[in-house]
Length: 69
Image 1 (cartoon, rainbow, N blue to C red):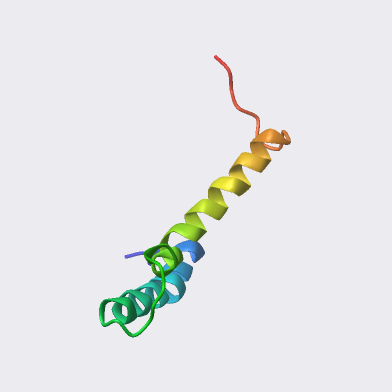
Image 2 (image 1 turned 90 degrees about the horizontal axis):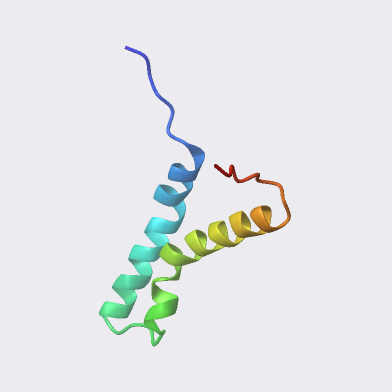
Protein backbone atom coordinates (compact mmCIF):
# COMPACT_ATOMS: atom_id res chain seq x y z
CA UNK A 1 0.00 0.00 0.00
CA UNK A 2 1.31 3.41 -0.94
CA UNK A 3 1.95 5.93 1.84
CA UNK A 4 0.38 9.35 1.38
CA UNK A 5 2.08 12.47 2.63
CA UNK A 6 0.22 14.99 4.77
CA UNK A 7 0.24 18.49 3.24
CA UNK A 8 2.52 20.99 4.96
CA UNK A 9 -0.39 23.34 5.75
CA UNK A 10 -2.16 20.58 7.68
CA UNK A 11 1.03 19.77 9.58
CA UNK A 12 1.55 23.45 10.40
CA UNK A 13 -1.97 23.71 11.80
CA UNK A 14 -1.82 20.43 13.71
CA UNK A 15 1.59 21.03 15.29
CA UNK A 16 1.64 24.82 15.48
CA UNK A 17 -1.62 26.69 15.71
CA UNK A 18 -3.79 23.97 17.25
CA UNK A 19 -1.72 23.47 20.46
CA UNK A 20 -1.34 27.25 20.91
CA UNK A 21 -5.08 27.68 20.49
CA UNK A 22 -5.92 24.90 22.92
CA UNK A 23 -3.50 26.25 25.54
CA UNK A 24 -4.89 29.78 25.21
CA UNK A 25 -8.48 28.50 25.52
CA UNK A 26 -7.52 26.51 28.61
CA UNK A 27 -5.84 29.53 30.19
CA UNK A 28 -8.90 31.68 29.48
CA UNK A 29 -11.36 29.11 30.87
CA UNK A 30 -9.39 28.82 34.11
CA UNK A 31 -9.20 32.65 34.38
CA UNK A 32 -5.41 32.61 34.27
CA UNK A 33 -5.31 35.30 31.58
CA UNK A 34 -7.46 38.35 31.03
CA UNK A 35 -7.46 38.30 27.24
CA UNK A 36 -10.36 39.05 24.95
CA UNK A 37 -11.92 35.98 23.32
CA UNK A 38 -10.87 37.45 19.96
CA UNK A 39 -7.21 37.01 20.93
CA UNK A 40 -7.77 33.65 22.60
CA UNK A 41 -9.25 32.30 19.37
CA UNK A 42 -6.75 34.12 17.14
CA UNK A 43 -4.66 30.98 16.39
CA UNK A 44 -7.72 29.61 14.60
CA UNK A 45 -8.96 32.64 12.64
CA UNK A 46 -5.80 34.63 11.88
CA UNK A 47 -4.28 32.05 9.47
CA UNK A 48 -7.58 31.82 7.58
CA UNK A 49 -7.87 35.61 7.40
CA UNK A 50 -4.29 35.97 6.14
CA UNK A 51 -4.90 33.33 3.48
CA UNK A 52 -8.06 35.12 2.31
CA UNK A 53 -6.23 38.46 2.14
CA UNK A 54 -3.40 36.84 0.15
CA UNK A 55 -5.85 35.28 -2.31
CA UNK A 56 -7.71 38.59 -2.65
CA UNK A 57 -4.46 40.42 -3.40
CA UNK A 58 -3.56 37.84 -6.03
CA UNK A 59 -6.95 38.23 -7.69
CA UNK A 60 -6.83 42.03 -7.56
CA UNK A 61 -3.34 42.24 -9.06
CA UNK A 62 -4.16 39.73 -11.78
CA UNK A 63 -1.97 36.81 -10.76
CA UNK A 64 -4.97 34.50 -10.74
CA UNK A 65 -7.13 34.53 -13.84
CA UNK A 66 -10.79 33.94 -13.07
CA UNK A 67 -12.43 32.02 -15.89
CA UNK A 68 -15.51 33.78 -17.26
CA UNK A 69 -18.14 31.68 -18.97
